[in-house]
Length: 421
Image (cartoon, rainbow, N blue to C red):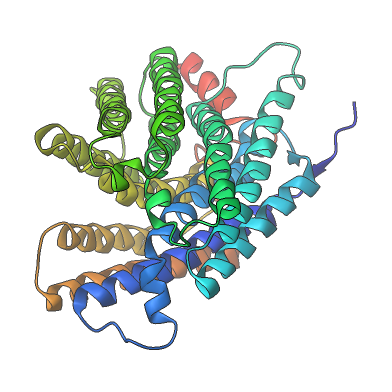
């Protein structure tokens, strides 16, 4: 059967550009505010006001779900592209337009509704591509951890984004206050859950070639956490409203704590399974593995803070999403795609990012905050140099074990290697 697919490199790169632009604008405004040098005129006050929506809606989700799904998912499924190409491009266009309107107009209902429509288009394309791939092979092939993470994260968004859109539509039709930041704060739990699912999918994928772990408990934990958390969150919104935790302190304490507790427990169990699988395994500290270990370290810090203080996991997962994104980028370009990139600037990027992260987690002076921002900028510069050199030369890596060919799914290569061992 002929299937209409699209060349997804441009669409995936577009999602990553949206995430990078929103991260630079939102993160830059945050650094300037913490340093006390935020200008009080021009676009800077608007950026400070929309910092939370930019980081919540336009950084983590477009990168971890939409971007990687377009860049990597077809190769992981043994396909040439994503299905529903028109809907795929429409999703990117709506999310990009929503980001521009958010920066230009501030946090208002219309940009969030456009974002909701674009995100629904994107996740429907992801799920349709995954389900359609089951007809490509006579024998059903097992999904890799990356595919499971993307599928479950997309399913969470498919069930929670319409709730956000419904609340925003009611806000618009009722003529209520134009300040929607409390409503967006209530959407932080689904974003935390998506970050957990997609991030651990990438981390398990990065360690799959050197570790031995059973995928069934990993998938069971991720699926159980996703389904239970979505039910709890949606029920809490329908019962008390999306902003009840802000307007009526304590009303949504139980649902919020239940979602964060489920995410904390899932992160602990998944980290334990990953460490058990890598114990006594020959693991080389490849660049994707460095970023994966960074993700695990930050998430571990978050769940310890969550258990000790009752908060901390959400903030840790926001930072961990950056590490998971770079883990996926280097894994997609190098080990999975088989292309060369310079290792030295890539490792230097990780070192600078880790130093910037360490400085940003503790209460420091304005001068130290500036140093943290400078280290972060230097880290991003190293990334641009690394990827620029890789894309400019665009040559295959010389190592024979680098990754799967574009026609062979990653999980098939992994099974072949295990069978040889």
